[in-house]
Amino acid sequence: IGLIVLTGVAAIGFVTVERRAAEPVMPLYLFKRRNFNLVTAAGLLTGVAMFGALAYMPTYLQMVAGVDATAAGLLMIPMMGALLITSISSGQFVSRTGRYKFLPIVGAVFVSLGLFLLSTMTVTQPIAVTCLYLAIMGIGLGMTMQILVLVVQNTFPITVVGTATAWNNYFRQIGASLGAAVVGSLFTSRLVALLSE
Image (tube, rainbow, N blue to C red; front, side, top):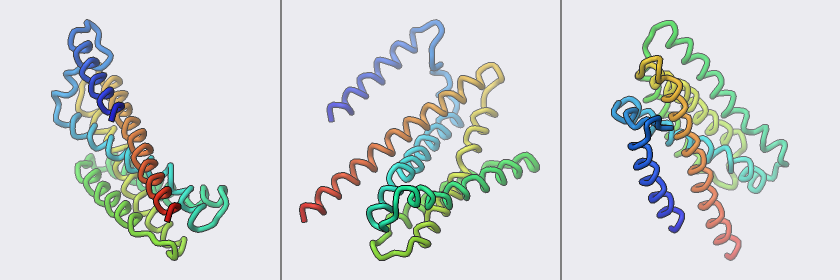
């Protein structure tokens, strides 16, 4: 709770300083664009989902499926492979057609479905099914991540594209930190409760 309060105070202080700075690190006018706000929020949530899964799925696989650390890492390949394939194919589709608006929406549906399926896992579930769930999530991430960056880069003039892209990536990293922290807290609290039982 203290860290949350401190984060709020620091955010207010940061915005106050940035509004008065002659050369702000983060120009606040970026947030006047609806596309930037939507894409930043989506990037933050994508970071939460992706890094939450990446940080703790290998541990889960080691503890529940009984595989060693190397095998647990290799079992993440379906997610990363699906991410790679859909990222490349969606990029080629956008290059050919110029259409991209539906891709992040469809990607978000796949990510949500993947997260839901991962939440239904049981101790007796075959590893192949877990890998399928990870692949579904990877499909969604591949359709979403790079397209969000493209939206930001097409929203602003060339003079601020670098700044806008950097801040979009920053908020994605914030999402990654939040995802690892939230999933880690849930993981630890459930583990402690179940061990005591």
